[in-house]
Amino acid sequence: MGWAHCGQDSKGRDRGYAIEATCDHPGCTAEIDRGISFACGQMHGENGVDCEGYFCEQHLWNWVITDQCHHGERCRVCDECARFLREECGFVENEEGYLVEPVPEESLSNEQLDAVAEHLRATGQAKG
Image (cartoon, rainbow, N blue to C red; front, top):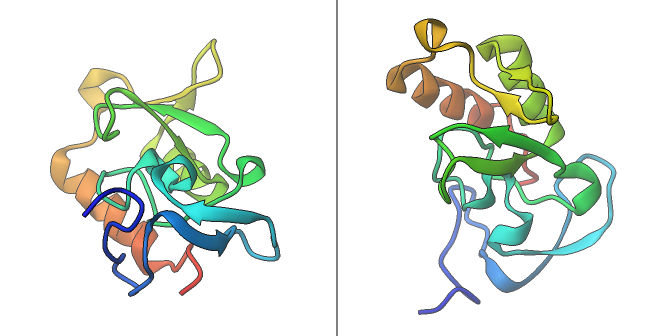
């Protein structure tokens, strides 16, 4: 199995770059696919900073720097995940415009990051 069709998400939706879809942002009808290019967190719901949704470029523009990103230290998240990271987790915008984690002595534990990921999935950010 390749990346064109790579299984289903927790909502039972097919995922992969060959899967045609629309943006998961409420009211948006932009045509996208369910590949990692459009995935919040830039992976299929498999890191600690995403909601498992798929978004167009207009709604997936918030860059985050954290070791929770799947492809290294940077990934893009949707508006709601960015809001949650700012308001609930203390992430701040650095001089380059990236959202960054709180200073090390205030960093979130892995358990807290897992709770954040579960909260975002439970809030239903993605269309089901």
